[in-house]
Length: 525
Ligand SMILES: Cc1cc2nc3c(=O)[nH]c(=O)nc-3n(C[C@H](O)[C@H](O)[C@H](O)COP(=O)(O)OP(=O)(O)OC[C@H]3O[C@@H](n4cnc5c(N)ncnc54)[C@H](O)[C@@H]3O)c2cc1C
Image (tube, rainbow, N blue to C red; front, top):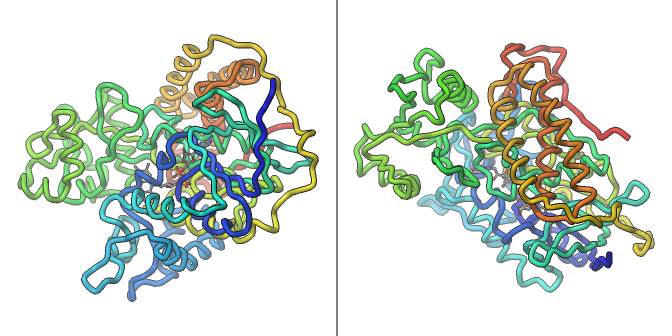
């Protein structure tokens, strides 16, 4: 099979905040090639509503932001990484403002700061309630006219090119033509974002299939803390499955929204003194428990007792989106379901984004820096991506590889047979997502995790065979990533014999001091 070869100095996989911010740090030092799976704005970043947490208020302090973050992490946050994140945050935000990202300002032209759950001060820098879109737009405009940059849309990276325990780029599928290309680079950044698509219900767009984690794991990197997956308690339930669930923001509960089961019982009563305003993971668990006990598909979130004009003014976006499904939120309750939202674990990195493989960096949601510990504080993820992708950019030159005769690097497998794989891939994908939702979801039990593990071990073997032997398509590559991520989450969950933060196991309902460690998995052999 003839494979086209492309060469670049810096190869960036992804086009969310981490990749774009990194690109702007290295763009004057060499050629930059960005491979991205779909259109350039198809990224979790583009959907972020709330904002970026950082210390700008005079009353606020780094100490306080650090304390809030570490408190949320429940003993597993890496304090040095948190310290770096909170201290470097304001400067990194100023950098992107200088590059053209526009945030909402107050009357004195200072950044307007919102307050969110878990933060003891106002520190959420935002652009209305579509912060992510403003960040993507600003950063893409800043790089797009630079002579050193190329962006290949609809290019799906699927395998890291390895030689001498170093990374020399990736193999990628040109989704439009079905052609496989070999991209040789002196330095590769994985910035592929999260993996919400491994669950049946998710707020993440279709691109979030955990490809980066799968590629790094298969190349020999350590993967950490995959059991800590954050679920958002309230996303819009739709009878026909959608690629991603629309988020019904926390603000609706903040403004008086009440949660009911389908018989009209306000189920947060007796669960937490703050009722619907309890922490995100508590509300998500309560919804999940109602759904599991009753076998229902959704619970109700009701704000219709409030003045209808007030609702429309405060939540124009939510009002409009629900109307598309013939739900008038000023008159009736919204059917909601919790959904997988954020991957706290990922590819193990040091404080400069370096992975276990020379020439391979990782930043953003795909990376594990240790800041989130067992639970992520709202709006810390964009901040983490911003700070650590900038640090990775700073160290990039020292970490470059070179000198390998690239002609000698051949594909690790020859894909010669064509299997009629599409139906197989679609079917298995559904099963993985459903099994993850039912057995490895918000509330876990040992026997459910073991049941999931048995299935995933079998799938892993079967899908690996399909992946190695068939003509590669996007379906097969993503299925391969999803099963790898499902396996890693389940194995990590099984090894944590306690409940801590986002990992809740009914058979081990309390924290266990002996488990106060990160879960690290590396591929055998
Ligand atoms: C609905 C929603 C609301 C959120 N709100 C907030 C918020 O208010 N504040 C906050 O801090 N965080 C929020 N988050 C989380 C935050 O948006 C993400 O953690 C962050 O944007 C991740 O950035 P990233 O650059 O790491 O990845 P992403 O922005 O997800 O970008 C990943 C990129 O990689 C590409 N890609 C993936 N696989 C491949 C592959 N194999 N080959 C080529 N390209 C690939 C994707 O197409 C995409 O371009 C929210 C997330 C969601 C889904």
